[in-house]
Image (cartoon, rainbow, N blue to C red; front, top):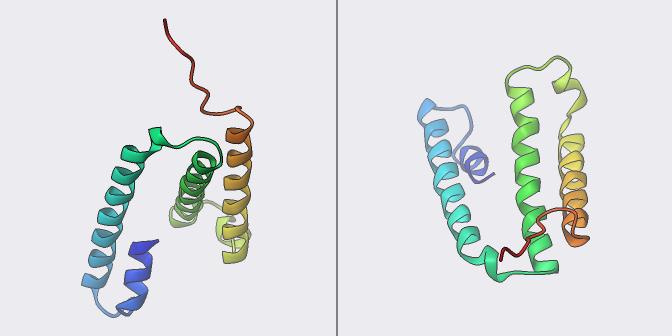
Length: 112
């Protein structure tokens, strides 16, 4: 999302270098987010952990749907309009958060 925002702010489509800058910003932002999550994820539990998982899953869903549109999967552009794209991503995030809260995902077992 940071890369796309950078491309839009710099004037999308006006110069090829803008896309390269946007991709670079996206990679740097993603690496920073991954580093922060890897440091603090073990310290979280309950609602905070579920919120973190939901936020991460929202990003994965957005990228996955955008990928189907990018590679021109038949009818993906017709089905996944922007509101549907965001709505499906939110629903996926909420479902995963609920599963995490109920213990359906991410259960850790103690090893002796």
